Amino acid sequence: MVSFPDLRLRRIREQAPLRKLTRETRLSPSGFVYPMFVTHGQNIRQPIEPMPGCHHLSLDLLAEDVGEAADLGIPAVLLFGLPQEKDPVGLGAYDPEGIIQEAVRTIKREVPDMMVITDVCLCEYTDHGHCGVIDNGRVDNDATLELLARTGLSHVQAGADMVAPSAMMDGQVRAIRRELDAHGHETIPIMGYAAKYASAFYGPFRIAADSTPQFGDRHSYQMDPANARMAMREIESDIAEGADIIMVKPALAYLDVIRQARDRFDHPLAAYNVSGEYSMVKAAAERGWVDEKAVTLELLTAIQRAGADITLTYHAKEAARWLKERE
Ligand code: PBG
Image (cartoon, rainbow, N blue to C red; front, side, top):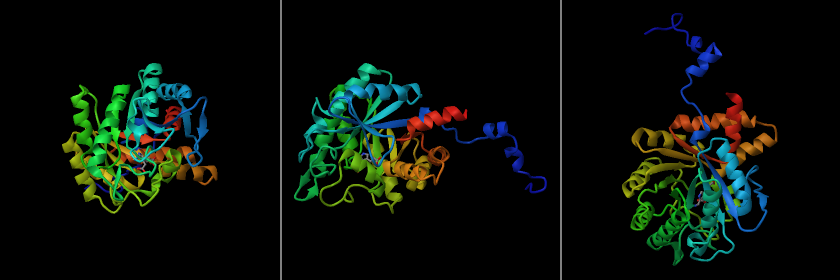
């Protein structure tokens, strides 16, 4: 084995061009997905307080922001909707004229090259805030499947390019796959939120989406943060049900899970850099405690180094701009 003084690892780091050439992980906007929040009304661009830089956007203002993302080289957006009304069974989720369905139509009409991914879940649409329907005080898995399938189909019928079920119901990928295939949409892929943890890092999102559970919590369907082997089983089951892309969520506190998933499965792997992870960076940066640009690019690099091909991040646009500067 060669060792010092014959071995000098700093030789590789001495020259800037060589540092570039030997970089193992190369960040690019082509790996980002930009999540957006759509709302009813006109001319609405309401800042989301705990997520600085993110807004509730009305349909008439949507295309401009989506166009900006497209110009920055971001291939896809992920849509979340705020319905006018909520009810026990989340009618707004599968309403053919619902907020997401209209948003999808708007984007596909005005920025047709932007890929539109929709989040398929009920929690933004139910008055109790749970991701499924309630029966006797518990979330009823199988009764929820039918509604998730209907939701996914309605998104695709509106023009969605891919659907992403996030309710953590057993069988949700299979239910949606069957429904899509039965209606001739066998070419539309499914990105499964396969290993989704019951995480406190979703806090800012729940304020943004007004989707905090009104009783109990999500621990009976989302995963225990202590479990990594269970994540592998969740991913396996999503793959068995027909998921084309698998996901680990959140990202930063679960880099080990991303790495294990990368080593174990050959499916394209996504990681969701969630709201709380974003808000922490924003808050510290606002106080001048961290350099937002440097910290963000370091974190996004870490997610990719851990093994993610796709990163869903609220920082997508800013990061794309910073990467352009850094070139
Ligand atoms: C819907 C959903 C949630 C997030 C994505 N899809 C909220 C939740 O499960 O409570 C969280 C996203 C984020 O925090 O950025 N179920």
